[in-house]
Amino acid sequence: SVLETVRVPIDDIYTIEGKNVLRLRDEVLSLVRLSDVFGVKQVLESGDQTYVVVIGVAESKLGIIVDTLVGQEEIVIKSMGDYLQNIQGIAGATIRGDGRVTLIIDVGAMMDMAKEIKVDIKAQLESSAKKPKEQPSDYKVLIVDDSKMDRTLMQKALEPLGVSLIEATNGVEALNIIKSGEHDIDAMLIDIEMPRMDGYTLAGEIRKYSKYRNLPLIAVTSRTSKTDRLRGVEVGMTEYITKPYSPEYLENVVRKNLKLG
Image 1: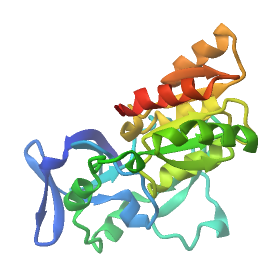
Image 2: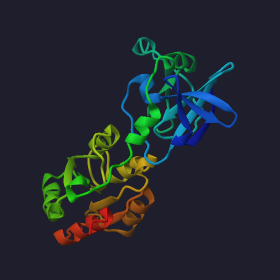
Image 3: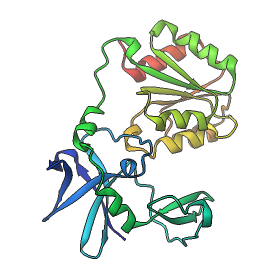
């Protein structure tokens, strides 16, 4: 069962005989990452702290590093029959309040799986820290808009900055780019009205991750009402630019948010 959730400094993580351990109050707990146990991609936590979920069976305890904490809910576990019978460490699934299906971990099985994990967590977390930006091309801006023409206009406006540009055609695609960790994104230009996932929802999803708490999210949209602007603030937009805009204005907003001279 889940005993507690904590946020701990990376400096509290140690390696003893090839195993990661965490000193938590008067105890020393074995420590693994959820992503390493199940072999999935992760969004690495930036900074000097990380989230740990402490689980236990009988007298045994284990610390699990997770990317983020979403919340706590009362759930009913449903068996998925043949669909999940060959997936080690999964007890079943549940349908959450927002309609999404979430897998439920078999705590006992996962504790057994964790015994085989040998990864230097602290070294990887420290190596994931952002490298210093030495030139404009080191900065990456993600442009999210379903209109090819609008993406092209934004590209041309940002050419004088010399930053690296990445494109996504909707919120789902952009969120997958963020979650993959393949690119170190420094700012995002986000259209509001897009298929699959709109800009408001995308911003809200991104702000769930501590790593992206201060990532500049710049709305670029034709919606001009005060209500739309307020909603942008509520979901975590840093700036709100309305179309049409001048290339110079967009360039200056991005320059300011990237802190380029």
